[in-house]
Length: 379
Image: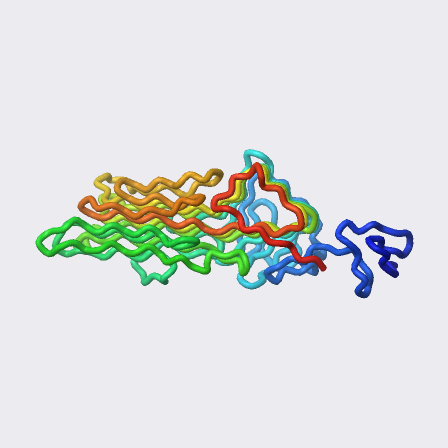
């Protein structure tokens, strides 16, 4: 039973050197990580599993992991699951994503992977949006409904011209790109939807995802515009010992769309939030929260068309469709759509990244946008 601290030595039955210092508060103990966002070390109880599976899909609402864990709260198959402040927290002993493997997550709650020991990512963890469906704890792409200020605004319809205006891209660290106006006719032009505003969300504390793009404008209510891209999700990797990223952890926004034979382009989704928290964090791979490209200004094809999804492992902007804006990436802001007959959608803004640690190394990393650094708390 520990009895006292002498410098960095924890004394009792034998002695132990505490790497982070010895705390004299009862009972005396070596300092350890104090996770943020309401996550506590009590959640580690009973979580004995080591996740190394080739491909996993996490449901942040039910706790199911396809191929590894049935739904349910508490510990199932050695993996804990708890909902804490709109986050689905999966608890393990350790986790390792193999190279050439992708783990994904979906659900209304943000995605947290909490390890008693280490998390190593040689492959990819992708919590991004797909088409108009958002990533974890992010907002969907517009499909005609009223939009919040952070989200890209819908492109208005136009009665007198066979075209619709472009929609705005989702906001994030910057404003989203604006949707383009329609070409003018006898009644003038119809203005495109504004990009979403620069916003407090996505955020890492609290963990919240990105903002979807707006829906493109309709042509005389007969030919619809495209849906907006969904916002990138929110992910936190929390490990009591260390985190190493040689692959990619990504929360991209999706590209805006134009439906088959469609009119105004949908706005690209904004990037989400990536949060790493551990005593030691090493990133030699990529952390990204890139915005999606806007949807094309019009689409005469019988097949739908869309802008690119935000890139997973580099800081290159996602291309928009024809006459549409590019997504935000790195330090590059999203661009606005352009006018053809209809208007192109604006690109989605970049999201946010934070690394909270005692020691970190990111000199060889790809970070899009640049990561905010903060000091981990100890307990």
